[in-house]
Length: 258
Image (cartoon, rainbow, N blue to C red; front, side):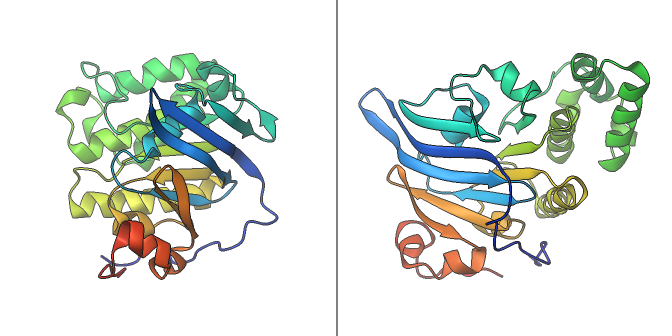
């Protein structure tokens, strides 16, 4: 697949950290999931998370959104300690948008009904609400399926709907969990371009986790690799594929990128 991202931001020393995880540790019973994990999601950055199954990628999203609390460590939004903030406050006050791996929409509502249901909660002004919905439908090229029930949409259309729902609240941070899973090559390419365009147009922080390493590395600026409860490597895609720890724990010696 051709390279989607034509440029990569390699240094964020002067960037604003929208989300910061500081020495996060978490166990489920006797099973350790995360140990002293620290990283930032910066404004205008696309960050990728890679790692084997069960390493804690989706758990990190649950920690950021407030569905799970860490055993130790802190989660900061705009340098404010929000570790104990409830889910709704993280969404409304700090503008965190989340696209789950599965679901995220009302199955028996049409596409337009889904957008209206969420927009009525997030956007009080009726005229602005209508404009926002129409703008997202146009941007994601969903005009032809506005009156189709969500359960009958294609995989790519469902994913675009869930991303559109997450964007209704004008998030400053967008979390995408396994967004390329079970999609065909053309749909993946479309989503990659959509993600890169969101970065350019809105300057938001985006964090993607996925098992499809090549697809993820095609559209991120930097990425982290998780293994054995810790971050074992981080850097640009070219830096990661040449990193000995990354090769040993995740990519293997034969992995090639483009």
